[in-house]
Length: 352
Image (tube, rainbow, N blue to C red; front, side, top):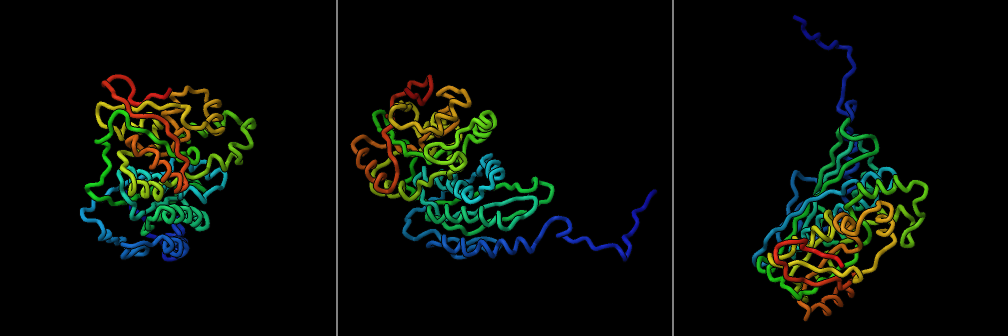
């Protein structure tokens, strides 16, 4: 039987840093993050970054508070961030994907936590990413109160990382948006997206490969890379203001699955939605993607947001005032369709 030999006294010590984990770099990142997080502080924060857990007190103005949670990532849009060295805005995408989801149930986002994982920590790159996360939180009125940076040698290629985020919001129990009051004749408003947002990038990347050197230099007046990497629009402040002033019945965040898969999530049984494609403008970006991919209108509408990032369902008597309120908050608003009766067969969303 072979026995393991004891290490000699002269053997070189093997530290955690030798194994690929640099605790000092992690500490340096935390110090870089702290002032970013301070800019996002809001009522309710009792203890933020630095502890084992973050503490938050639900604002006392809520009589029957219901917590709403959401979690998401950025997806393969990160592959373009790595390739092009564009790390400053993917953090905004991360925040937007969760806070916009929480918003559709009528909830005000309260706080956000992030998870940043890499093989070898580059403090400058990580700080750029977290700077975007802090910007997204600040623009959403949401506190960045914690997170985790994981350095895992061998798990990720050099220069790559992964992101995940988690948001908690709150809504009065009596004001939760369930879509139960939606009925035929209600108006469907669409809030313009800022671009592809953070879904469909596996297809976007294939389009870039197929186009090669023939890819356009600009789209919609922006350099190609900027057009594709424009972060997901944050709808929180404008939609919360509209919810406070108008009887909105339902909201839908247009993410993976596009218009065809996400709108039905906000509808009660027996209803569907008829969209008019002429109701909102088509951008060069989505024209180029469809042309390059060679896909049908149906495939476009179930892959991408196709120019509409958030859908609002409201009674026709209040639609005009609600649209005006949203425009005053900076949104581009289009009347894109209406709710119709649905007998139970066929698609729930049609686009004509």
